[in-house]
Image (cartoon, rainbow, N blue to C red):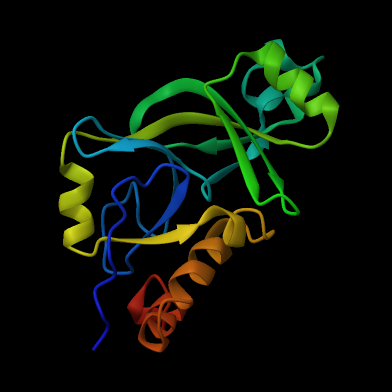
Length: 186
């Protein structure tokens, strides 16, 4: 039997991987980077493994002649799905520091891109939870918590990122993570 993990008081800066049994189409096999969280205020994050397979310039031609136009575009979540949000992060491994900028202005994102030590992504929409909602979902074991440094910065993308996080929880979870999305294809 799998032991229920302790839920941190603040999940900001952590990754949440959806449990394999989570069927909500907005979050099925998804990984969410939690940007802000408190039990009193709720939580905000973006899905980091749902690429739209296009760049910001492909989506919005006003970015065509800017360095920011090359930023990959992701579905950030079901809240405000037409709103573009820019995020940038960097990892200073030797110092153990993860820096995250969320909701940054295009000029700042461009400067960070040109500086070369940040990853910049554009997100359509975001994921949000009201007061106590994420805590309830965590108590139901709908999500698994993972550190950003190990996974998001390790190079895994798309469903591989989700599979890697879930598969590292336990041997049972590895079996569920490797199962096909459509069980009839097994």
